Length: 141
Length: 265
Image (cartoon, rainbow over all chains, first blue to last red; front, side):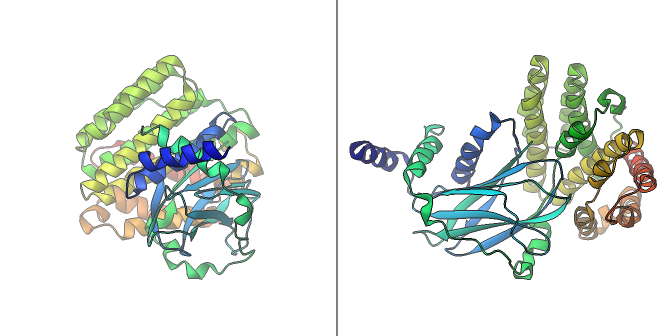
């Protein structure tokens, strides 16, 4: 197991470019969403992204439809970074139904109780970089 | 190598402990995100997101919702709006599983993108729409239509035609809402009507129009859309949207979609 982890780290060191880009973050977010396609989710081809400093948050307003189930995926290709994504309603109340976070990946599931405007809040919680590239994609069914 | 990299990330990430996650605040002050109300931070859904719900709460006759149109190419703002409606038509045709219709729409998308100077940006998507429709691969046709929408908008932004990119989204929303209200008119339900509860999205489109340069904003077509969006707003703001309101929204969106079809608008 230890040897496998060492090999993996070595592979990553060989594969990764010196500087991350939003495109790489998008690829990572799409990869995180991919297993959900097999569960019947449609993944949007659109992506949102940019760079954030450690502790910095950004919000997106999004109209979500009652009757759908959504998964939102945030990712960065800065491996030692930790990111998060959560959903709040128009009153600022946390409404995530389920979340997971694995270092440079995070996701949240939500079934809106009513059609309306919700806020997706993305955050780079921790990062070795001054600015960390990130991307957000989502899937629905 | 490009494809391998994200997979390696996932493997690596799965080794990391998820126990370090910070607990999110149960309540936040949304006013801290002043930019959240700005144009760039609003996500516009695609019509397919609504159509999926309609399929769950009823059995719409999607073939009845399709239309035959004669593409009339006018000014750039009209083409952008028309392109949005045609892509929305693509989502309707996917629901109807109509291969020929989807293929024709794939060609129409290319034609309209060419007329606006962004043909190359959607050539691959158009071919893929046709190819996947031929195979009946509807899930991926939806993805390609969504991708075509994004690619054409991105290409317009690169040409500093952001206002046209916004009009593509607006055209798609108008046609999507016309179809939604048509389905609801035939089989009204409160849950279905709840899908119209999109006042913030309407506000977003109105703010985009307001921010457009006068040569676009003051054209008769865009000005007509701006005025009529204000008529829709009170109809979709109620907690419960009535059948009468649905009918009125349908009339307004049908009028606007028909205006977009006329190249002299």
